[in-house]
Amino acid sequence: MSLDNKDVLTTGEVAKICNVAPRTVSKWFDSGQLAGYRIPGSKDRRIPVNELVKFMKKHNIPLDGVTSGRTRVLVVDDEQEVVDVLTKVLGEQTSYEVHSATSGFQAGMECERLRPHGVLLDLHLDDMDGREIAAFIQSSEHLTMTRIIGMSGKLTDGQAMGLRSAGFDSFLRKPFQVRQVVEAIEQASSLVH
Image (cartoon, rainbow, N blue to C red; front, side, top):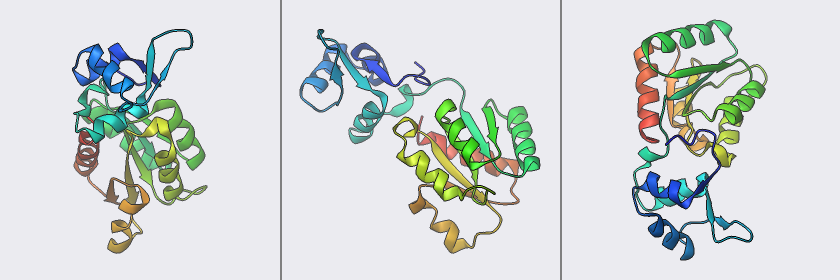
């Protein structure tokens, strides 16, 4: 089941994702373990995707039922040449659905629209620091599954290590090999799938 454009799920959909019976989901909901709401005038329950993800992580339920389909990757760099090369190579050598943005503002818009699994994010954009975009992604309840891979040729090892606390899941030092990019995406998205 692909939840790419879904914000709210039925108990039946949650049951399929968690591989349990619908009545089990109802029990989780009724006991307050799984947050959600009831449809007014009905007994039907609805569970927001972000609440389901929190619940699944808390109870060590594998997240592989939450996302399916092709891995969506957003490449964010203000150097058009870098964007073009990464988009072309990832498009040719992987089965990823690759999108791009050349500014922080555009990256924010694309993240909301695409809900990518992974974002390859240049830290030094003309209009915005990459850390600001990472903070935006982390604060968005729709992007809880998005993994952020920072890219830079200017950071010291110490600064690169500090990116984890700024919300980055991984870091690539420019220039890098395509294999490194694919490995970083696979590693980050394995945390999701």
